[in-house]
Image (cartoon, rainbow, N blue to C red; front, side, top):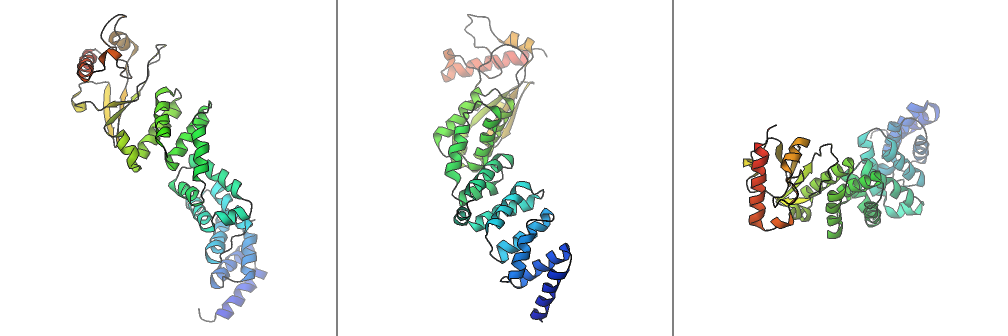
Length: 318
């Protein structure tokens, strides 16, 4: 820069004698021009405590990326941006700054617990992979997964849903947890939690080869239950039907979502009564969850029984 000395003096003058906005802009320029400037650093640190969030983010960017300031005030301001900024890009940049500062500096300022708690909330409030990457970079993933996996067993539906959403970005680290999630899909009665379970499995199967292989050629039946007191047994994953496209069922739509097939079934109460056999019958009832009687465990009997029930369902008048 030509006449750098004159420019620096002019910026210093603006910082000392101008109003807040002009002084803040001058401090930003001086920080770029002279990263070692104490005046610029002190003024930018003051900017972190006042003014709009967008201006604070500008000050943070210069302090962290240009001047290398990693003080407790800076870390707290980064956490504030991650928590409260209305600008998505700024929240993303906050995660990158935390990674740049690193765990040791955060621990040195006694802010590890505060950082952990905020990132934990972000895994379900704003489950971006940037958050998961930050958790891993700061060596918090193992501890966080311990909490998330324990929370899956909570009696509170909201807490279970938060844990399930967190798994969508943190991942499933063991077969035991994977099968626990599948079991939850069987027994979960809360529709919001069930939906989150389905979405998490679909997302993880699209990015995790191990989960993709586990769910390959499986069919996930999502049942839209009629309003009735009849107790229906839930079914988890079934083998893909031989020719799902040829199934002549108006109320049964098969939609392929790579890597899962999601099937929704809806039946009226009258249809349920017609399709459920009387007690003592050897024919398995065609429940919305496609419950298969133990008498039809063999592949041949299973296929024959299902085809028969599909034919009955197709012939049932609307």
